[in-house]
Image 1 (cartoon, rainbow, N blue to C red):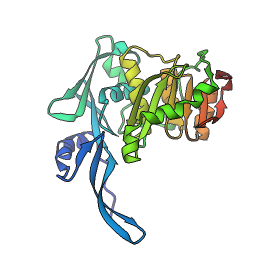
Image 2: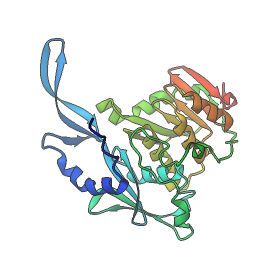
Image 3: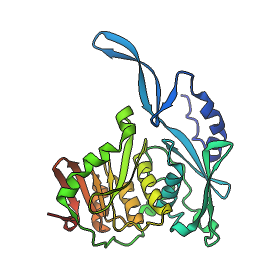
Image 4: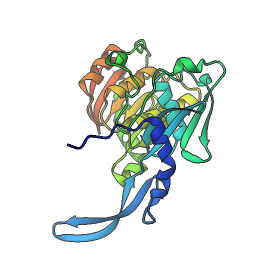
Length: 293
């Protein structure tokens, strides 16, 4: 039996990234955040060749002061927000003032270096070392016990009218240019209690989309986010609630279902969880007092 190869380390993945960008064939091009290439489509017995849009996915290496930290698979775009949000969720960043600079390597566009401000003890922030993929939102934890959340419950007095929530699925879909083109990309957005959109982002990883919107807010000095709600285009799993808790978001809304662990953690940590928001229907799974008539 052939033995499986060991997984690549962060350093090994980083070394191969210079070779990744040139592998795009001449028949592929970027278009609206995606990649277009020819496919053969079958409909019954009919066969045709036509272009098809794919969700773009590339590796991003994140370094701290020149030292490789992690590699995450993501949809290119708003990378600085993604990095800030990811490090914030892992508590490698705890405030806007922790950041000195987020710089892209001029020799490798898929590599970003984060510099801490002088107020931060960089060595003290290295415990959550991770190799992330487009389906992993809790990478970097060292044991099951590390999944326990230290953040206190969210106690924000946010209230949102049901009628306001009913309009959010359409507003989120209106921002999803990548999904409209490819059908294969997730979205997340931050709204205020009136339903006004602060920011929306797309990515092949649902947790990446969340990191991008939280990172956007963090870099603009808006964290903690006690006066906003988070909406996601897919399901709500544990890692989404964990990110919301760290960012102090009092409400998470989704067009799909939550998992049992997501509901349990949200209930314990003071977060209102709304699922199956479609048209004028929704389920409120925890802390329903924040949704009013």
